[in-house]
Image (cartoon, rainbow, N blue to C red; front, side, top):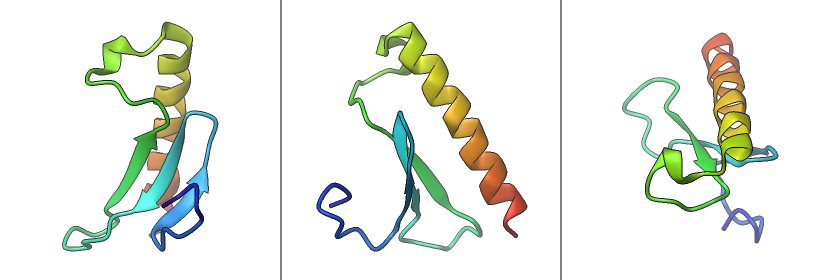
Length: 68
């Protein structure tokens, strides 16, 4: 849905993932950072991509934290 620009919860795309608002807001500021690569475990990502993903995840988390 994100690639088709039809996801109403989509916020922003980064190099390694997508920031989306949780569609169930029982928890304040619920959001997700979805990885562009689909693997069953984080350690299965290539090292350089994994570091980029974790860095971007922390930046997204800080932005959500500061938004409220």
